[in-house]
View 1 (cartoon, rainbow, N blue to C red):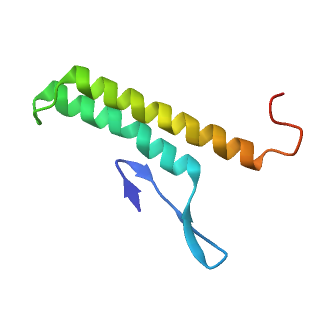
View 2 (view 1 turned 30 degrees about the vertical axis):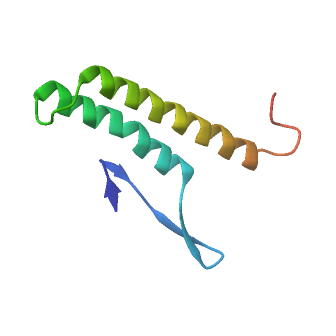
View 3 (view 1 turned 60 degrees about the vertical axis):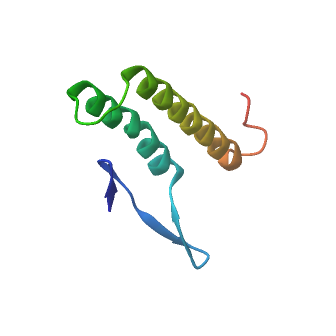
Length: 81
């Protein structure tokens, strides 16, 4: 399955389906590029400045997800080195 050009792979864990954090953060980061394309080509009534702010906010959220995932999977004592 793909979303916004980012391949997404569902993984079965403990009887539930999950998406990898890397897939989710890549998808979030891709939204900014897609929206910017729409804004610059006039395919949507989007303000480029607002698109930039929203894209930056999504990128920041993706960064926080990455950091949280790394913190939860890093060996004890390795975080902060």
